Length: 455
Image (cartoon, rainbow, N blue to C red; front, side, top):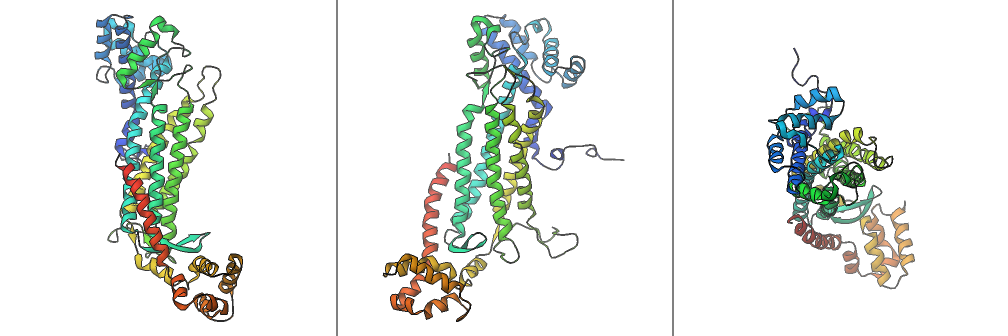
């Protein structure tokens, strides 16, 4: 005896993706949207005087999944081997005598591409909500830790101090930029097309513009200003490349968590249910950053989905079908997985454990080497050439003989002692100046971020 999920093939069906987001791409949802387009077309044609009003109203009443069953559409498609023809025949049957006007003047892509725009409209709202949630969580961390000292790292090595809040503010600002990109893309993406076989609208005659405008007005879409038989595929390519950018940010943030959770650093940790969660099947002590690793893995796949839509921009003349099959896979997967990884990442940061003491210790225990920049500037201000100050501190930092700690070597150096009084040297070695600067800049970033997230 097997359960109902044993035959499922795609991991999105049983492992990834929120049910409400997967539902956007269900066959039932897609049927409903296609029927809405057919109904809007008929009503617009009646408004333009092309078909009788009563027949358009009959088509509108019939254009629901309750009247046009998915099973019936499938049965017709098995005979015709054409999905839209199957839809129109099933709708015509449901509309009775008025069915003679179904799909009048239209071509298949008029329905599928316009229905796709309705689908994407729902998805854009979901993705915007995901970005707002993650940005808000990051901004909250930035606010709480605006002045929490930590060491900045470049090339995996200690650089100069900053605050943990500043790290989070940088991430929040990146998320806000993606929101701006999504807003900018929206009017280019959410377009329909009811312009016939090669996009000129000739099949609708002198009513072409009125029919397209009327139908799309009912669907709350705008027309593609220059279609071929299909809506321009640069629009989908732009969407999937935006998702790739979002995935890049997500992986960057996830990688930061993974690195800072390393045993030898241990400054942050993902949420972990110590009562029940298992880190390893053999190493009982393990507390692995599995959510961040999962985000990393999914982000790489989302970026891979950016390539097929770029290639789909190339069509033979006014259209071919080389885009069709892969779009059925790429668009739902890219969107569902982007929603998934953004949600998981927000969960990580929402429950992130921040060890401020460990962060401060990393700054303190670095032997003062993180303050070489500050020392160099102080020595330069006292008359030493910048290059000479840099070379002096470089030699002191890499010295093998003498005091073990860099700060002790600095205090013992004759040139430093000659140029900097003890209080001046203490000030140059104090990381608080860096942390204060980071906190102040965090505040400035958050003023912009929080304004955008409230929109």
